[in-house]
Length: 253
Image (cartoon, rainbow, N blue to C red; front, top):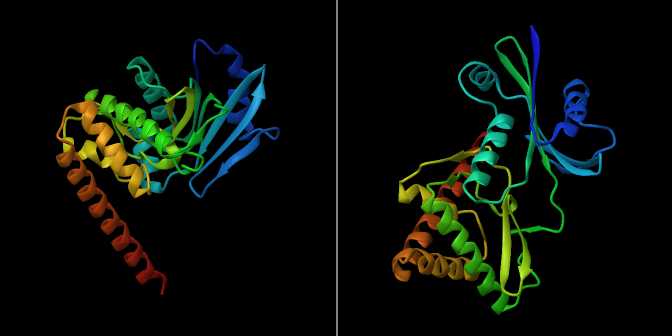
């Protein structure tokens, strides 16, 4: 039997009509696509003078349809609840507004996460436009953010370049927002796991070195030790990635 679960934030009752519209018809026709991936789609639109972002998660594989339908929260709900927890801990992420889950009996289906749309930000995939001084300042601010996340025991599993937005807020200061937050762990104490945050945050070796130095300074750890750890985890990550690609190619032949 088909069922729909809609949860709207108490502070955003104006979003409820949109949530019901999405549950019934999918992504609105008047929305603008900003990401169209194999697994997820993200659109933006404006309703009731509110800039809104909707992330549509694809229907999971059959195993996860059962898991999400019976044992574990789906990605949209996790995104919503992780956003609340992050904001309560003092970290920036777009304001959560609602989530929607569609299911058929015990089989989980499509889900949607609705949050505030951010404008005027860029992500870490592009470091163009920064001179050396600006890169040092950006690395210092980001190093402090990572140190704060680790001190709070937060491990963002997909801490990649596209999932960290930033913008300048004052001379030499930057503001960061975490997005795509459904894959996270809290209360993590394993330092080896936490240091994996450096694996995918940048492909720029110079910036990675600056970031390592900034992180060491903000955590009070020896700079040489931190840099060695970051380089080793990065090398291991790239080796695993290369092996994975080679494995995939074997099955494409």
